[in-house]
Length: 313
Image 1 (cartoon, rainbow, N blue to C red):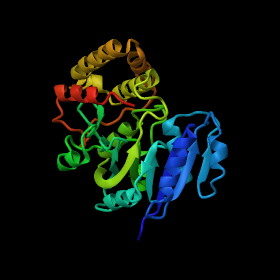
Image 2 (cartoon, rainbow, N blue to C red):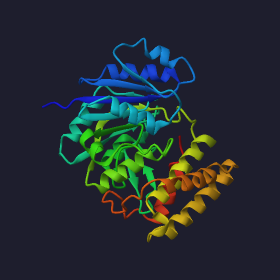
Image 3 (cartoon, rainbow, N blue to C red):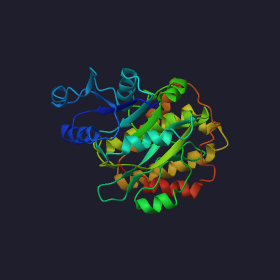
Image 4 (cartoon, one colour):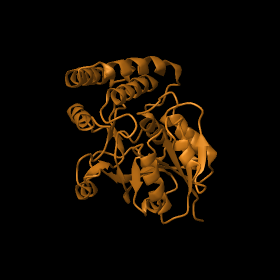
């Protein structure tokens, strides 16, 4: 039986990006339903969306963040497969077909990661990996598609948030995105929880699209770095990392990262974000640290190098 597909597109303004995203989704080779969640856009995006009867529009009354918008869209559908797509992604026509095919390889595959490219043709992302401190990194950044396919690098944990395909049954089991994180880190948390529950992730190298990056918060802006820092602090506490065998490594790493960010950006956005996230993390439940998808061979120096390469929008 052919699985049904829901495509959830969270938006917060930037109609020109959304229009291009919807046009690309309309050209997909498999049937699907598009659910656009307007997260209180500050422009006329909602009015323009209502001019597209082929799209299911869900409007939030206030700006609740990426996780909440995605969760609303997921709950509004009933497809067997859910694909989250940022509005700054232009999907190749076969992207959905290839993602569904990848998930069909085994019933315990809970997610699939496409090969996203930057406008210059280099790799934007090929899923996420994570080290023992539960720090997540985007795989393949800046390499050529051929290089990444031939040698993917670190172990695949889950999909990157710009385009992420999930089996609804897996989401029903582990829960949706944590709305305690406004933006950045929520897809890593979901990937960690899926892995802890025994769900795998499939790489889909022929599922492709172009991701502009930084379309909402701004590439490497203070807002982006603060929000990313919040997610990091939140997950450090949610997973009890500082009380684990990896605690000392995590502390040293975060000191280096925050100091480096202060020197490069001349502000305390990353540190303030981590502090806020750590405090907020006290209000969530403690996650399992028994996660098969974590790459335990990803060492301290390698993780730092990935942090440098991952300083992006």
